[in-house]
Amino acid sequence: MPLLKIVILAVIQGLAELLPVSSSAHVVVAERLMGLDASSPQMTLMLVMLHTGTMFAVIAYFWNQWKRTYFRSSGAFTLIAIRLVWATVLTAIIGEVMQKIVEHTLLKGVPHAEIEDLFNHLEWIWPALLAAGILILIAGLATRDKTFDDGREPSLSQSAWIGAIQGFCLPFRGFSRSGATISTGMLAGVARERAETFSFALAVILTPPVVAREVLRLVHAQHISGGLNLASAMLPGLIGMVCSFLAGLLALKWLSRWLEGGRWYLFGIYCVLASGVVFYLHHIGY
Image (cartoon, rainbow, N blue to C red; front, side, top):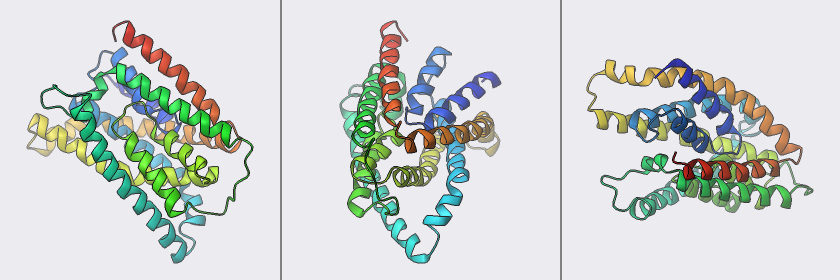
């Protein structure tokens, strides 16, 4: 793949992944406009490698904050670890159930259907973007003038809601993971900053198994037996990973300013408008 296309995809991923606007939707549309097969193993591996770059951006951006909160004592670490594990377990269960439902409904009749096949269907991406935008709008407007207890971590029930909505997001390209989890946390009564840090801590836990799954999918698809071929297949993703890391740091600063400044709902407006653009692109044949 040409270097320019890798950089374009990486910048889009880095910005859109850490803003609540669905990186998958933006990257898929960009791939379609550039004539790339968004559902191929190489491209889905590229996408998760770009996710890895943004994961490292999250760690770099939030590390000092996590040290002050999650790692300040063994008790604080145990408390948040239980909530993160609980949320992740629910994500895995609900995500697996939703994936099976999608494969047997939206992908019914597709030979050897995989969830990645959704990357080729803009007609299913625009409704997901619209749904995410509406959720962000509701959360942003409902909590715009609300005062939170900023010192309280999410409770087990609040963590459950966040983990459940994350699992629901997984199969749907366009349903922003960060947008849905942060919005759900805010609606459940979690402080904006706490919802943000908890959401991205979950993302750090989720990314490695997703990357491993796509590597195995590529190996299976191409019957790669030697490390050299696999390394060659991953090289474009490694280049993109660096670019998405840098773009991700910029996006996180933007996200934090708007979230803490009560402008969260603006991301919802953007998602609603973006869903209209994706609908139009699908209508004209992309």
